Length: 315
Ligand code: FES
Image 1 (spheres, rainbow, N blue to C red):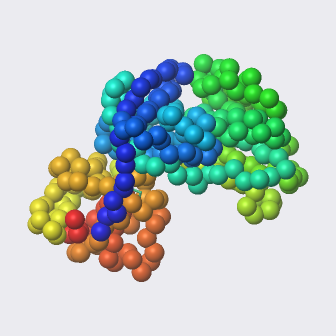
Image 2 (cartoon, rainbow, N blue to C red):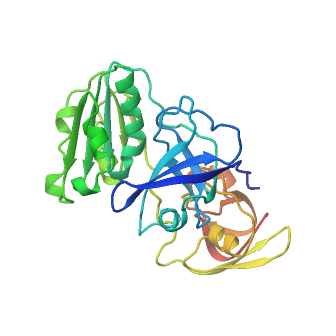
């Protein structure tokens, strides 16, 4: 059975372009109740105008917030969430947001090394501001393609502490060389958010560091539909309704298109929100959530499909 995702209504009160592809949004609750506080590294999940749920880091000070500030990069290759924020989340639009969650929390440490790539700057910028405000030592390395594609360039340049902004022009030969920072393990805690190649590089360089010193955050949507996927039908046991799942859509998208109420969050098989009971059929499990002993009886409908034939799920 799917879980219910609790949301609150927030209205878009301003949008501000940070670069050609990155838009900052300020969101305030539609009710008089103030937004819940949060700590740097926290994110909210937003039902974007396309219907897809997407996670965005909160950028503003979360101690007693009057609003939530997020920044969204237009990702043409994604499944429409970011594109619909850019195209349709105009001032006055009401969006549903979950409460803030933080799986990327700053821990007490003698010093912090903050590493951001591209839009991964959003939680890292919040962390840097907090550490700077507390007078704590930190180093920030921020990698982007060019100055024109760098969100918060002026603000980050003005931060106290050791800040390096590195532009690589998209050329692998110009990628920042992190080895000096990782050769000898230090007392620092490292926080890294950015594209997968950057995070993989940091993981590879830090293999000899003590466990627990490295912290990663990755919201990049995974490719949930593959070129050789085929169409099938899914029947909802409750109503008996049969819905066609085209080759280029997920079960979740097909249900949503058919007007069925669904809940989801990551839409990439990692959070567990869309877990549904599998009544009949054989699933092609692609998630990272289900235990082996659940795989005959459950399916994550945001990412998994039918292995052969059709499926019957409880909904
Ligand atoms: S929505 Fe997160 S696992 Fe499906």
